[in-house]
Image (cartoon, rainbow, N blue to C red; front, top):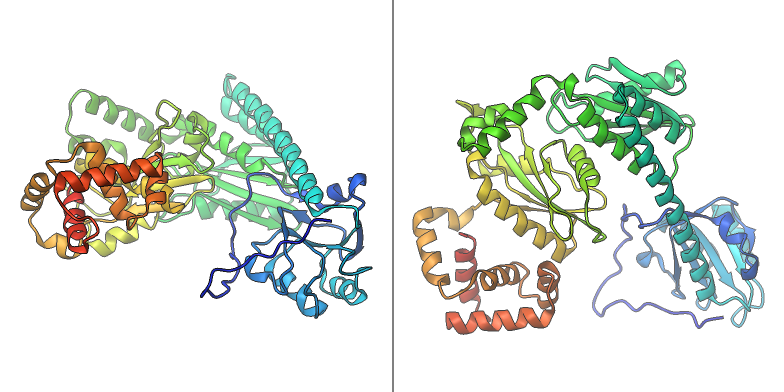
Length: 519
C-alpha cells in the first residue's frame, strides 16, 4: 500500500470550510458499484448504503480532513490518526464525502468495528481496501472509469446532435426537433409561450400534476420580466423537470420532463435550445426581422443610435467576451447555446481557434427619445449583476453602456475577460469610471494619458495594464496574456525603461493606472 500523504496548510492560515457549491468535474460521476466491480482491486463494501456517486479520489491521513474536501470524494485512509471514529465519520458526511476507503495494514490489522458502526449509523459507504491494493491503483481505476464515462457521454451527445440537426432540416422542423429531443431524453418536450400556452409538444403525455409543475417552471424562465433566469430545474416525484428560455422577444420556453437524468442531458438540451431559437423565429414576429434590418443598416453606414430601436431593446447594453473554461475552442452551436442562456441572439462565435466568443446583451433601462439614458453607478452595477456566470465558460463583461459607445465597451469586455482568466473567476465585469477619476474631465484625462504613455507600444501598454490590474503578479499576468512569465518580466522592465519610472513606487503605479484606464 502506498504511504499515505498528509496535506499541510500554509503557515498562519485557518481551516476554511469546504466550498458549498464546488464546480463540477469535467467527467460524469462514477457509480460506486462500477468501482466495486473491478475484481483486480479486491474492494469490499462492509458498511453504509450500496449506492453512491464518485466525483474524485482523495487520500488523507489528517485527523479531520473536512477543510480540504469539496464533496463527492472517495476518501482513502489507513487510519493513522483515527481516534474517534464517530466524530471522524460525522465530519466526512458533513463535508459531503461520497465514500470512505479504509486500508488495512500496516496501521490496523482489520477495519475497526467502531468505524463500521459509525458508517452504518451515519449512512456513509465504507470500503475495505486489502493490503495488496495500492491507493494509487484505486485512483487510476476511478480515472479510467471516468474517461470511459466521458467517452460514452461524448458519443451520445454527438449522436443526439446529428439527429437534432437532421430533424431541423425537415419541412416541419420545430415538431421534428421536439420529437427527436423527446426521444433522446426519453421523456416529453414542449414548446410553450410565456403564458404557458402549448405551441408544439412531443413524447409521452404527463399526468396532470407533473404537467402543471412543468408549466409553472416554464413561467419562471419566461422573459416577461427583468432578471428572469435562462434555465431552471425541478423534480416532481420521480420526474425530472427543466425549462430553458429561447432567444427572441416572445418569451418562448422549451420545457422538458424525463423519468431519469443522465450525464449529457443538459448539453443535448442546449443544442436543441439553439436550434429552436433559430427555427422559432417565425413565431417571434418582427424581432428577428428588426435585428436583421438593424445589422444591414449598420453595415451600410447608419449610426448606432439610429438602429437601436430596431434591435428590440432601448435600454443600455453590455458587451460580453467569453472563452471555454477548459480551453477548448467554441463553435457555432456552443456559442449559440451560451447566447440563449444569457438571453441574447446577438452572438459572434468568431473564426474559432483562440478567439473569444462575443455577445451583445441588451439590459433593461429607461429610454429617452429611443436612446438609452446614462445610468448612475449604483444602477449600472445592478444591471451588470443580471449577467450570471455560465457553467463551463469564463466571461468578461463591460458595464452597461449606450449603443453609441459599444466600441469602447468591446475593449472593456476584452480586458475583463483577461482579468477573469488570470484570477480564475467565472465572471468579471469592468465597472464604469467612478471615484476620483470621475472628477477629471475626460478630455483632459485622455490628453494626459496620451502624453504619459506615448513611449509605449500597444503590446507594452496592454501588458502594463494587465500587470497593474493583477497587483504585479507575474504568473497571473502571464496566464491572462497567454505568454511566459519571463516575457511579462521583460515587457514590464522595458516599460520602466521607456517611461523612466520606478514601477515599484506606489505613486507611479497609481498615476500609470489612471492613465491606462483612459484607453
